[in-house]
Length: 241
Image 1 (cartoon, helix red, strand yellow):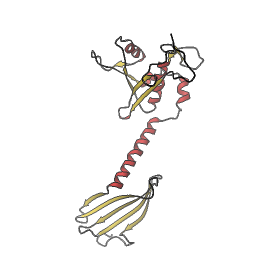
Image 2 (cartoon, one colour; image 1 turned 90 degrees about the horizontal axis):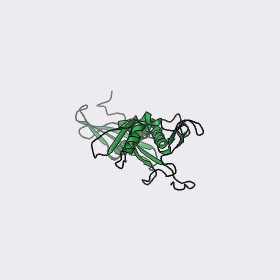
Image 3 (tube, helix red, strand yellow; image 1 turned 90 degrees about the vertical axis):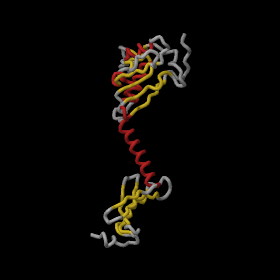
Image 4 (tube, one colour; image 1 turned 180 degrees about the horizontal axis):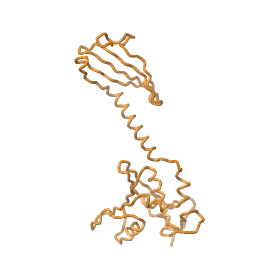
């Protein structure tokens, strides 16, 4: 018998992981949170219409619909394949169920875990249309969003590295000269301003040329402040012109 379902009680829960470089995703869990199965009141029952809430026609189980909705979200992040592990108790019924939905075994070795894979577009078809329309904006581009986050994170790490460790380059022209490039954080932690500076010195350490600019990471603007030598002097005569 099905257990009674209270108001606001969790019925189903799905979680997935995006693998950007592989253009694939994995289903981490399908059931309810805390490793629980789908709620008894809906388990195995085809009660969810595909086309619209009140329309006649094919229906899915809640678990199938949730799997389809998860696939629809993951597809928006550029995923083309969906993987899962069939937590079968040995009867083979769960493997056959996923096979009916479009998954294929990645390994059929006896005793091995039942890892399965399907084209994500096929699994998206399991999702009720109105679920996807109401949840995922038509212009949502998850892949662009994640790429922006990755680029921003890498840029922040790169900035931090430059602030911590100025770069020094050896140059043959002028002979045995050295170029030091540094980035200095200005103001408080949230202040987007950095002082960027490049200083060229000769073999004896004398300054030949200095370039100084103000970098704002929020507007991605680099404002040149000075080219010459410190204290407002022009470039050293040995390199001028």
